[in-house]
Length: 175
Image 1 (cartoon, rainbow, N blue to C red):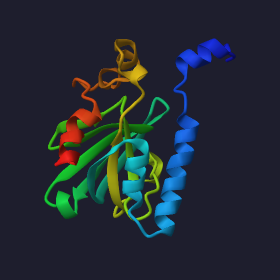
Image 2: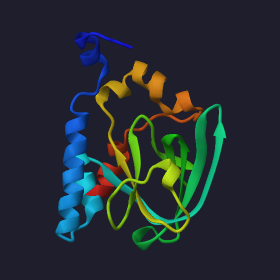
Image 3: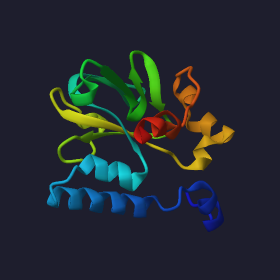
Image 4: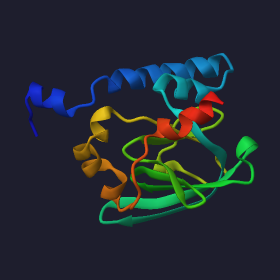
């Protein structure tokens, strides 16, 4: 429905199209230069590598017009011996390790093809894919009480407090 420019400025997350263009360019450049494309995405987006592994299970169902489900990822490399579950409702909502939510909406959870750095949408997740889960901080307006009420974990039925991804992973990245 039509809105005014003022309403759009208030509601929109400005700069997202430019950010997506920069992320795409970073992926292409990393691929051409045979560098780590996941690192290029996390650096460009200001995100964090949360988990890497191989998809061992994907379950989906359609309910009320939504694609609901989860994917389980067995850890590889520095994540060997660990498992992550990412639950989704058309988009990734929570990433959990050992039943503990470690990244949640409204922060962005992306599952990338580890080798190519390209995103894998919920409908394209498949058994055997080698993937990396990254968390990207959301726009500050989503972290307000109104933003969390509209898009935080509680809105989607998860009784957990929202913890910004950078609070969990900045210390690990600095170490």
